Length: 617
Image 1 (cartoon, rainbow, N blue to C red):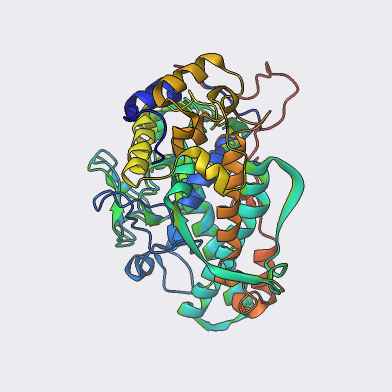
Image 2 (cartoon, rainbow, N blue to C red):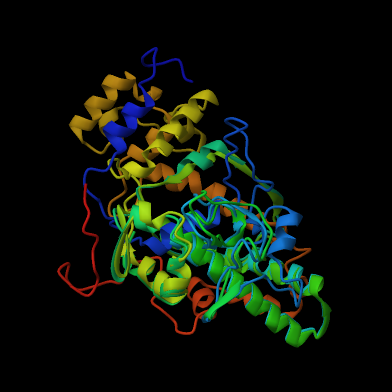
């Protein structure tokens, strides 16, 4: 730590309760919705996996970039248990004719569900904690569908391909889609830029560039955006508290992906069940998932990331990606009827990775940036420059990404309101509502503003205190030192830092003594937000280099791999290049719901068509 200010740092619990605890929900002026908030969680927790048992500075993540491990699992055993091992596809269940992640009985993977979640509701997802939130389950469902959709395309184009070739190629496509969506949707929104961002890896082909990434702890801390979460969740006119929302895995099948995606887009921010595809249960896919004991085995869904049973939002995305994987497998199998299961699976996996990157850039980062500039995923833009195609996750990036203010105080799904208690590990929510209903609900419920303080729900406040403690044990530099490192002018006074709030400036000065002693994470969270933006200047300027370098540094973006043959031919390459958040959801649902990272724009604040959470602290 920098030798200025007071000798003893203020108590971390006092800091978060004094400056970060939500008193009244502060909506994001940039219009960010829950669809964005859950995308951020679903996307980043493939590489943000702090190993709490090992201690600070350790991560369980085996990769430091976009490898789609949260969709497929982070090791071979988990991946194989989640795979159908036929036509490159992922396991699923059909509910009302729609595809969802399988239960943990159908895909034997370890998931983190509490004991009260019935086994039949424990969905199996690539990331073990994604059963926590319906929003995560929704994205898991969407990516599941997308993977299987790409498999169908590749199989049709390469009928001789094996399951392995179909799977691996689809996986590459999914990674590519992810990067494109992150840059052109996610980062584009987040940046606030009028400039349109593009995913174009070829732009770096003629320059020196390191295609490798490393996640920094600062990036991890920067990403703790918990203020995004509202105080309750609105799904199709139903309001859910946190209690009813957390681990509500049945929400995805009850409402459907369309309704959830539309709800999450409008709220400011497997197996077949009833004919729809969902992730298998842990009994069907034998993978370890982190479900609490109260989650019934039939509700424990098997997902690539073992904790994704935590939130219906994560389960929703797991279901969507499951459907997408299997959809791509069908396409690949029709195109390559002789391909083996392995070829179908691996090619689809590559396609899914590509889709992921594209969506992250063009939808997720686009929204987050606030840029009017349109971001584009165009790897070829880097082909003539030196660029390292490898990523490394920094601890700072991990911390930066603690965006818990995004979360509301309750969750509204199709007119029902769920508390955190009812929402966490509610895996039945995905099949009860369906992907459509969840996606729509999450898209319509506004998320919280991340920066400026006083916007973290009490249920997740301890996470923020933990980030501060972690940064102290790892001896991270003060906030102003990071501003210098990123060529930003250091703040001279606390008053300048908080944008003229004299009371807040005085309280911070009493705690720290000197502006140069202000810590990294409190600095990111308390910095005065830019006008009409979700957070302050530092979050964008520090987070953007980590994000875009990590996305474009994926090996599939390198000149050696960024070509049709990597993705099973022109069809797979086209899937990556046309990926978007809307396409991802709508190609894997029966109806195309309202799905966006921005809540619908209405003419009046008194418009009664969108239900608002009833709970405010």
